[in-house]
Structures are given as structure tokens and as C-alpha cells.
Amino acid sequence: MTNEKPYRIRTSADILSYIPHALGFWPRESAVFITMRGGRVGATLRVDLPHNPTPGEAGDFAEQVRHYLGGDTTRDSTIIALYSDAPWGDQSERPHSRIMDALEACLAFAGIPVRDAWWISGSVWREYFCDDVRCCPWPGRPIDDITSSELNAELIFRGSHYGRSIEEATGIGPELQVNTDRAVEESTRENVHRVGNSWLRENQFAATMGAWRTAVEGHGDGSRRAGRLPSGIQDEESAGFLLASLTCKTVRDCLLVQISIGPEIALKGAFCGDLLSSQSGALMVPEALNTNPAAARRADEDPDGTPDALAVFQAVLVGGHDGPPDWKSINRAADLFKMLLQFSSGPSSAALLTMLSWIEWTKGRGSHAQSYLDKCLELDPKYKLAVLLEQLFATGRLPRWATKPDTAWSSIGAEAA
Image (cartoon, rainbow, N blue to C red):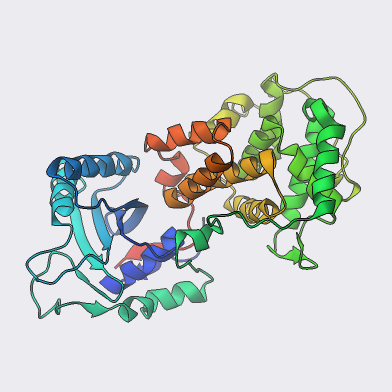
């Protein structure tokens, strides 16, 4: 969350300039939906536009959109932006009219009527329903009206930016960009072999989570050390250790909870899940990441009266936690994961891609989440967490964080004038 004063949206060009910043990229052949809560912007949804749908297919599309938008229970209306290069040669023959007619009817019946709609091509944009050339000149206004809007300038000044495509925004193209580093590869193999099943020893597990905390906190500036390894990771041995630890699914899951709500509940939740071993042993952590954590005690009963740690742990993973997330920590971790991805392979790559997908889902950025997930399933179609996330995404369920103004992620705040 940001404590800055919300941005003011005063014109159509403002709202259209807001959309790529909210999505992180400029959409193509897409329908973008923004729910409204009175004068405030709510959730943003992007879906691919169907090509020449039958009436039945258009109705199914509208129903699917209604289902997805239903995750935002506070909304009272919807605005739509159609990004398409479909020809609009006659003012009275609107492109994608069958889709829009179905959406109007379906969303009105659902109690979230279409408040405004726009059509954006590669060169012009215009109000979708307006036929009055006095206010909506034919064939439309130049795209420069959007990119040079007052809000767009303010967003860029405040540090927001977006990619020209989803591939550019996520850094995930047809092929993963892998930075072959033999020292990191060798360190990863050595740590997988050396630590083995000891990842789940209580003291080793706590030390490993401490190492990840050191790396994430040290990555606050989002830079690279000496132009190679990410800041927060001092050497190839440390990078290999962190990548090797992701072959343990309990480390991976606890890491998601830790970056979201902090280490205390994350560790207690993992300890309460009966997944760890109390067997003692020497700690195996690189010197640069060794925070010398005290051995964490079991926490089946919490003397401080906080909610059951295991229940909170599980709720965070499935998007059911009501408490505020630490978006600063999540953003740092996401940037670190993206950089580590370039040094990873096999199970470590699958874990990083899935974690990045989960992070984007918690932010309400479904296009990003699906992009990372698709790449993971391409690498390993049977990676269990990715398969489970695919099933979760298919339900259209949004995490509670994304549906509440006081917990939703935002790189920008927006308020309609």
C-alpha cells in the first residue's frame, strides 16, 4: 500500500493512461475491466478478446467476466476498455458489438452495470457508445492524448512504468534468459547433495529461512552486485544455496508466507505443521548468509494469544488471510526472484516461476500471474504447486488482499474526479 495522496482521474485520457500502469503493460487485442466503488477505482481485469464469437460464445464470455469480477464484492459499476485493431470503418458498425452487447446485459443483471466504455486501436481511441461527433470526433482522438495525459506524466514522475507487452513486463519471452554461471550451478548441485533431507531439520530450516530473510532485506535497492549477482547475495556459494533450498517445497511455501507477513508466523506455522524434524545437526549455511538464528521452538500453543499460526500460514497461501501484507518485502522478494531466475534451472526455476506467479496473483495482476505459470508448466507440466495454482486461477477467485482497499497492492493510487 502507498500512503501517498490518491491520484485524481479527471478525463477519459486519464483513465486510459492509468490502465497500462495498473496492468504493467500496454494491452493488445484485449478487454480490460475496472470495477468502481463510487468514485474510486477497484480491481482491474484483462482478458483476451474472442475472435468472431457466436451469440452463445459471446454470452459465455460475458458470464466468465461476471464470474471473475464477482471476486470484488465492494464494486457497484464497471468501466471497459477494448484494445483492438479490428476495423471500425462505419461509425454505426461498432467492432466487437456482439461481445459488448452481451457484457452490457450480463453485468447490468449482476448489479455492476457498464458505466463507460472506450475503444483503443494502435493509432486512435474513442468513446465506444457515443455517436455525437461534437464531443467524440470521428474516427477518434490520437493515442498521444493518452500517453501525454497529465496523469500519465504524474505516474511516470512518481516512478511507475509499464512494458510494451506482457513479455517485456515479466521478462518471460519464448525462451528463459539464462545466465550460465558454472560457479552458481556447481554451488547449487553441491548444496542439494550436501544438505539433502536436512532442509527439514528444525535448526537447519530456521537458519535457511534466516538466510532468505538476509538476502531479501539486503536486496532493497534492486541492483546487481558488480553487475552480476543481485544485491543481497554476496557470492556464488550463497546464490547456489538459496536456489538449492527451493527444491524443498516447505522452504518454498514458508518463504512466501515470510515475505508476506513476517518470519515469526511463517516459522511457527511451519513448525506447527508437523513437517519438520527435531533431530539436531550441524548448520549448513554460507557464511555471507548466516544470521546465527537461535533454534526456533515449537509453537503448538501460542502464549501471546495470536491466531493459530498454522491456520494463518495456510490462509496466506490460498489467499484467505485478512491481515495486511508487507508489500515492500513482497516487492523486494519478487525482484530478487526474477534476478535469481537467470541463474536457475530445473526444480529451482519451477519454484521461482511459481512463486512469482503467486505474488502477481496476490497483487490482482492475473495476466502476469498466468504468464509466469504458463512458463513453469512448460518447463515442468507436473510441478505440483503450479498445477494447483492453475486450478485456483480457473475458479476466478481473488485473494482477500486484492478485494479490500486497505490491503490491496498498488504501485499507484487512483480516484475518479
